[in-house]
Length: 114
Length: 114
Figure 1 (cartoon, rainbow over the protein chains, first blue to last red):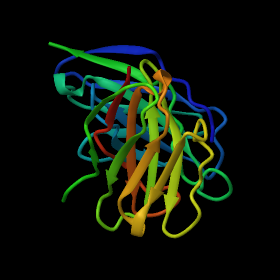
Figure 2: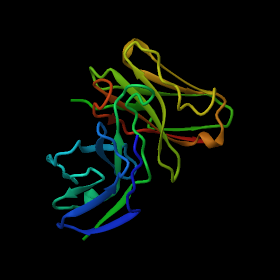
Figure 3: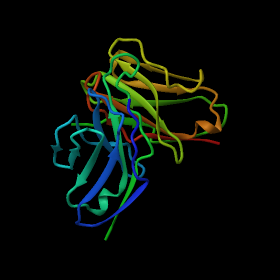
Figure 4: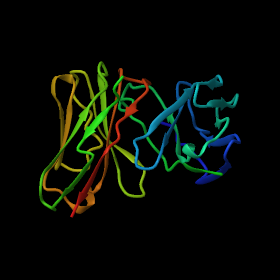
């Protein structure tokens, strides 16, 4: 699976949009971009995923650049409860040796402040 | 519906003892993964089960670690002769199937080896 690069930490004011970037310059054509987050002392929580089109769900929006080398997770109205570590993961097919496992990097620590 | 559940939520043991950690998957999920998260570290893959296929054990750190999944449902991760470096949060995730199916994580078991 392709390696991802994320900033170590970011701050955001409550009520404002949080934009979390991720670089995945070596992504291949059949690899998806997934976002998970981990709130302190909890298991990771799925947020959203996409291939090349922008995606939106009740939690967030995912913007993927046309060349697919980077993406941005957008939390439109951040709340204090959105404070967490956010992981950007590039994931390929389950064939061969990958078996669909997720490879987590260090993620971005997002702190939402009042 | 009910999510992934894990038990115990916390476990303190003495060095050299064996421990068993349990994961109850979401009903109908055929894929089950174990991950480990050591203090200040990212999540690392341990083992993967898919239906009746042979498990992918490539992430197990030593032969003291083993896991089984009975009847394609509940899974148990066993650590024999525990060492202090085994202290970590052990996370279970399940998915509907292979490949890019979304993985849903349990709350984890926090293991402390004294």
